[in-house]
Image (cartoon, rainbow, N blue to C red; front, side, top):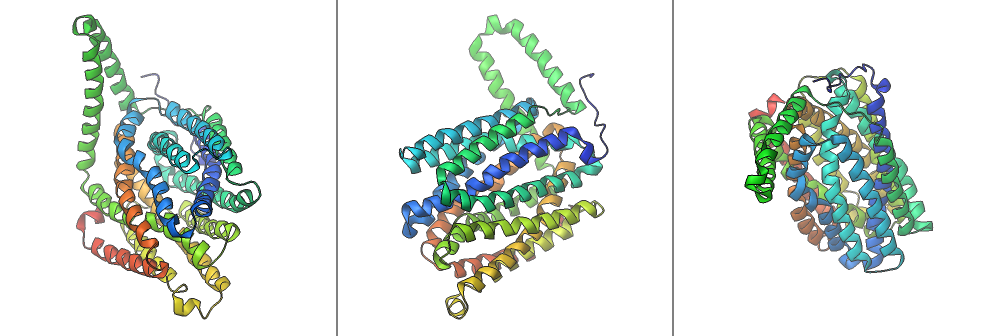
Length: 449
C-alpha cells in the first residue's frame, strides 16, 4: 500500500505531473495538426479532384479502424499495466513510424500505400495512448480540479492546432510533405521525452487488485511445470477477456452513459466524414483556394475552442451537464446547416469567394466555441462516473464505439462528396443533427448526466 501516492498539488499550475503531461501533448499535437492539414492537400495534389474524396475517405478509415478493433484491448492494458510506460512508449514508436514514412515519400516508393499503411500502424499505437492519457488525468489532479484540468488540456490542444495549422501551409508549400513528416515525427519523440518524467499515482483499489493478481501469478507459476506453457497462455488470454467483460458489465450498469454512447455513434457517423472529406474538397475545388486559406480556416476553429474552454475554466463546476450538452449538440447541427448557404450555386454566384470564405471563418469560430462547451463537460462527466480501476477500459470502449461507425460514414460521405454539391451535404446533415437533438430531449436517462 505504500506505493500509493497521494495527490498533493491543489493548484493546477503547480501540479508538476499534469504540466509535464500537458507539455508532452502540446508538442505532439503541433505535429499532428501540421500532419492532418497536409495529408488532405497531399492526396488532392496526387490524385486530383475526381477521386480525392474516395482517397481521403480511405485515409480516414486507416486512422479509425485500428481504434475500433483494438480499443477494448487497449482499455484493459491501461487498467492492468503502467499507464506512464504506455504513454511514453506509444509516442516514441509513432515518432519513428513518421520518420520511416518520410523515407517512402521522399524516394517516391508506393507513396499512397505507404501513407495508408503507416497511418494504420500509428493509429494502432494511438489507440493505446488515448485511453491511458484520459484515465491518468484523474490520478494526477484532484477531483475538484478535473474540469479545469480538462479545460486547460483542451485549450492546449486547440492552441497547438492553431500553431500547427498556421505553419502547415507554409511547410507544405515551401518544404513539401516530407518537411511535414519531419515535424510530426520529431514532435512525437520530443513528447515522449517530456512524458518520461511524469509520475502517475495509482488508485488504491487498483494497487490492491494488481497485488492480488501478482500473488495469483506466483501461485500459478508453481503449477506451471505440471500444466505446461500452453495453459499459461490460455490463462493470460482468459484474464484479458475476463477483465474486458468485467469492465463492460460496469459500464452497462450506467444506463445514462450507455444511452449517450448510442447517440455518440450516430453523431460520429454524421460529423466525422464531413470534416475529413467534404471540407477539404470545398476549400480547394468549390472556393478554389489553396494551402494558405485551408490552414487559416482550420486555425479559426481552435480560437473559438480556446474561448469556450477559458469560459469553462473560470465558471463554477456543475454537477450535471445535461442542458449544456443538448444545447451545444443542437448548435452543431444548426451551424453545419448554415455553412451550406453561402456556397449554394445561386448565392455563391452573387458573392465573391473571399466573402464566402469569410463567412466560413465566422461559422468555424462558433463551431470551436460550442465544441469546447460540449467536449469538456462530457469528458469530465465520464471521468467522474467511471471508477479508476475501470476507467481505461471505458475510454477504450468509448474510442471503439465512437469511431466504430466512422469508416462506414467515410465510405458513404466519400462517395456522396464526389457526387453531390457540398452545400446539399452540409444542409442535409445539419438538419439531421438537429432532428437527433430534439429526439434526445425526450430520452429520460440522459437527464441524469
